[in-house]
Amino acid sequence: MLKHSPIKLLISLLLLIIGFQVSAAKLAIVIDDFGYRVKEDNQILALPVAISIAILPNSPHGAEVAATAYQQGRDILIHMPMKPLSKQPLEKDTLAPSMSAEEVDRIIKNAISRVPHAKGMNNHMGSEMTSSLSGMRNVMRSLSQSNLFFLDSVTIGNTQAVNAAKEFGVPSAKRNIFIDNHQSEEETRTQLNKAIAYARKHGSAVAIGHPHPSTVRALQKFIPQVPADIELVPVSTLVNHQSATGEPRKTLRMQPEGMTHSLPTEKPEVKTPSQSDEKLTEPTQPISADKTSVPENSELTEANKNAQQSEKPTELGICEIELPTTRLQGIDLLMFVVEAIYQDKTLQPLIAGKKAS
Image (cartoon, helix red, strand yellow):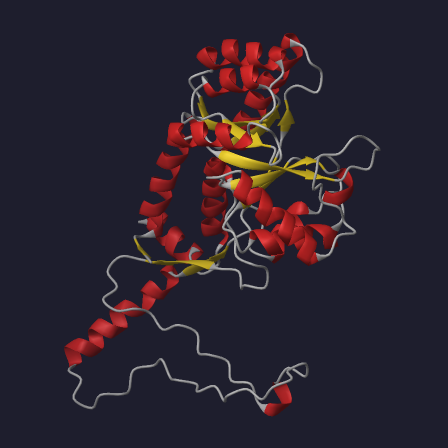
């Protein structure tokens, strides 16, 4: 619980905002399709360890590449083949919406064994699979047992990957920019600049590329020239950790200076039989409504009574801020908190009093 006056808190937040304006935006670059091109794979592995790699589980050199990347301290993802809408040659064990949950789990566990030290998974192709909520639920059900995050490559607009990840509490992130849809060094550099612009605007960005010779050359020239306000980071640092859906949204509580005891919390609600949820299938234990108020003390001195009375106005300093469902970072989060403080009706009299004095 924060124990600072709202005015001091606002000043601190404004100073933090200034600091965030000059801090680096985060850019994660993931290179897919590892395990087939030995020359290009090694060239990527020679780049800074902030560049993450995604290994195809049935590739001939996948395990060897994973061992090297792990020794470097580099983020490793399983580049999981998933069925596309278009008809094209598919990798072995390509996940499809028609598969049972057991079959999906078996394939994913096999992929994990083939790509040691993986921290996460992203989809190889997969426009049909990722647009199927039931199919992605099977994927996330399996991943929830393996402590892996999921990076949605976003190969189709109506992807259900993140929705399914939320249901099972699987940490997730989404691709923002593809850097080499067209295999030319100039095009890749243009896309990398777009990724920088996106990171500056939103605080972070995830870019995905492939080990094409043109992509390797573009990255070799780009990385030494990354602007000072951009920080290259492993993709795992941009993953949104979340609990499974259904967990109550949390509130942020503040308490002003000078409080010598915790303020009363809300009394637990006691459901009477007429208020009980009709959907409950099992009887629930009765909830005891413990009183949070302090019993009256007949020997309380006058000084203590006066002290209690002097503390009453400090209740104006309590505010509850309901955190948004969307993830806010950096300046956006700080501005949200500042705006919520100013709009809080219980704090407005206190802020006005401070200004008047």
